[in-house]
Image 1 (tube, rainbow, N blue to C red):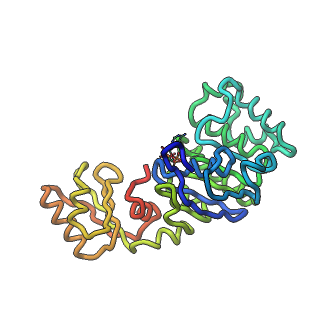
Image 2 (cartoon, helix red, strand yellow):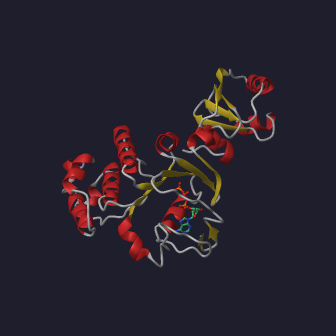
Image 3 (spheres, rainbow, N blue to C red):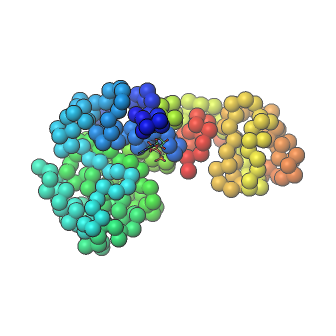
Length: 294
Ligand SMILES: Nc1ncnc2c1ncn2[C@@H]1O[C@H](COP(=O)(O)OP(=O)(O)OP(=O)(O)O)[C@@H](O)[C@H]1O
């Protein structure tokens, strides 16, 4: 998929099994939204093949649309429409919609039913978009960053809803920047970078597929991680995940720990709480892409 001179997705290949939750992870600009919008039929790829429920999403979009629910990253609703009107309208377009009032109650949307879409908070817009995506009882659901901007309670309840949909046989494809979300929800994870899938597997298999251990330490914020990387063996990645909290991913051995401590000493700073841990999915993502997720 190209936008003018920009190649957004190139040779990306993935398959989603029915009745599963698949998470597409990747740094900003990796091509996740482009991939998902191509599967939804909103974009026509210049080359390659896309089949969704066995159908061509562009040429056979009219057959696909009644069977698929879509939650876009933003927008997707008329700015002046009131949220309950929107939901009733979308429901009326489907043959066997969910009970709208029950859905409003389930998603805790009762208090802002008559508020126009443009006046809703970001989180409320997200809830409405999710409701619009599922009200038609889709067989397949595309969710582009479904929990971005949600408070922790709303995020948890969205996770519960996605798990319930999966239990009832719905296939879900979602993009996310949250590793815990991918780990908690998905059967399969595809890590995308530079428009390609660079790793795939279950969250557990992916986490354990890289270097066995990872090193975490805390020190002064803003250390020069590029300089630290140059002191460490080739292929070792270092990232400051939050100010003063560092993660080192690579082949961990006693010499590596000594080098980190020596390098910190040369900067005149302490290495505090130096820990060797098993790799998480987030560490593996960092190792593969060289980029922190958020
Ligand atoms: N409408 C567009 N016109 C031109 N370039 C675009 C357009 N949409 C996306 N791109 C480019 O295509 C590439 C992939 O973008 P895409 O939105 O698919 O990434 P993403 O993985 O979803 O990113 P994010 O996590 O930031 O949402 C980026 O380089 C982006 O700048």
